[in-house]
Image (tube, rainbow, N blue to C red):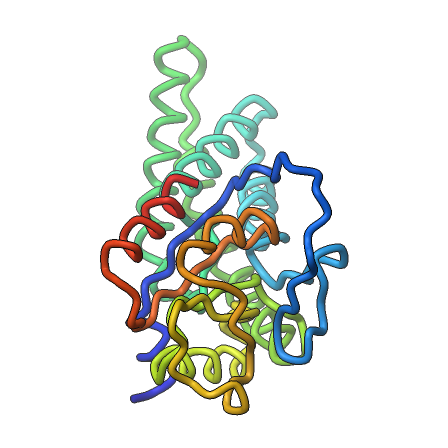
Length: 256
């Protein structure tokens, strides 16, 4: 099974907007990651779209440049910019992704850009302002600039990750053969942007000497680990834990 298939077939449960733990009690440190290179106080460097919204910056610059190129008024520029960014955000363009692909984004970028231009034009008609054909043309120019920006940024992002820019901290549920392969894949391919810091499993099947990352807790500790270490991603592999406990743990993650 290829490394891409291993990652693609695993469910990633997002746990964004996690509340900080209310307890101020001193807890015993948990050793995380291969050789424990990071601690909770240090935090992790995050690569790509998790911390630095590369796509958002590209779109903002592209729509402003397109508007300026077609000499749109300041009001029209602001309106088109807001519409493009809102529509793209609603479509999930600014979410963290393992392997962003330009061709996958192309149809939706074109569609949302044209919708933004049409909405902006309709709003000017509704407000009895002079209608500008440039709004639709600017949205088309924006698509070209946005694609050009992504074509430059995505390879640079992958090179940055390969060069040691660590991705989002990630927990793997299940310390078995599949979980071990997942950990190896993510550690060997940092361009995916996910950095495995440990397994969560009640009954690990992989011998400690054969693990590249440690077991950091059981299934019932998953939610507390996510809060304590501000982890946003969980990859679910096979585990021998009871299905009921797995379902409850994943529901807790989803509610976060």
